[in-house]
Amino acid sequence: MSADLVSLQSMVLSVGDTTYLDYGAILEKREGYGPQGNGGNGLLLHSALAVEPDQGQPLGLLWQKLWNREHRAKPPANETLQQKKQRRAEARKAKRARPFEEKESYRWVEAMMALEQEVAASTRVIHVFDREGDIAEVFDQVNELSHTGVVVRAAHNRSLEHDPNRLWEKLEAQPIAAYHAVDLQATKTRKARTANLAVRFCRVQLRSPARLGTDSQLQVYAVYADEVDCPEGEDPVSWMLLTSESVTTVEQALTILRWYGYRWHVEEFHKLLKSGCQVERYRLAAEGMKPLLGFLCVIAADLLRLTYLKRTQPKLPAETVLSPVQIQLLKAKATRLPKTLTVQWAVESIARLGGYLEHRRKTPIGIQVLWKGWAKLQDLVEGWQLANQT
Image 1 (tube, rainbow, N blue to C red):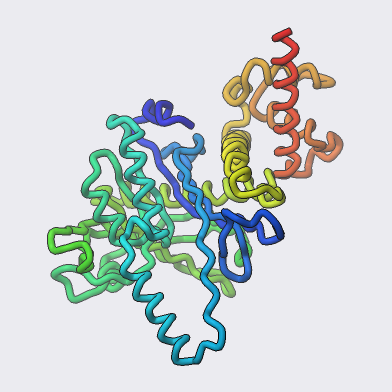
Image 2 (spheres, helix red, strand yellow):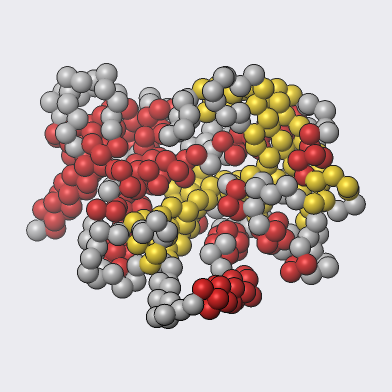
């Protein structure tokens, strides 16, 4: 999605996350890839996905950053234990001394600064980050930007200015303002369920670290949502959200919770990229992999938008998600047509191109089937365009 299209919105959420792309199976052409821990070797991809703030509809990609870590030099032969400790201590000291712009955590601020410039000033961009984005530089930088805001899930029980309490103690001392039900997605460690959250909120001033200087003022609003009556055997949900946006009413607090709930979409995008587009199965040199990644990311974002519309607004016209040429080709491939061509018809037609079996209508359409169908549709479009050029 281009910045020009985003600029037609009065407000857009930019949900950010980083994923690891592992190409450890590549035994040759490894230059340009880097270590990832646990023996992994590959690339890191940070994505900022545009989401409509009222209904949570994914709109497309706003910004991405792709990089690899550098391989560490092998330790000297016959290194003593004392020399090893000294070498590691010096490495840690050098790492701490690096400028912030050279650290991986800079990607959170970098996305904010890039979109401040690319998106028109008439559109407010609210960045939604998980706990990795809880760094003081994020809250410091937002003060310097004119149409940028943040919602960050806190990872640190920070000290507060002019207050003996820390962040969690401060919010736990606030009265419960409301109870709010949230539908939780299933993950590897929990089943899908509805959580009942006790909601508290207040304004706080985070203590600024010395590295930011004495002029830094980190004033934010905190929204604390803690699950009550959690089912036995499940870990209770506890969200401490820090935001630049004003939160003085229950309605505003619930809006911040809803916005944070949309952060799940960027994880769905990365899942589509890996499981659907199978981005990790390619065996290219890094320089060839990067442009291919750009192509596959656009497809994954399109598929996410398409599948979400099928879940939430299946009766919308097919023209909402497909071009006239795409619709014409799907109609030509269909054995029978409904009276009205809808988003649901479009998704099911694309899935059939990818091998979805008509007699298994009760079986959910899988990511790989949808990806294969979309790729085949693009081939058909390209063939149609070539035929019409002759």
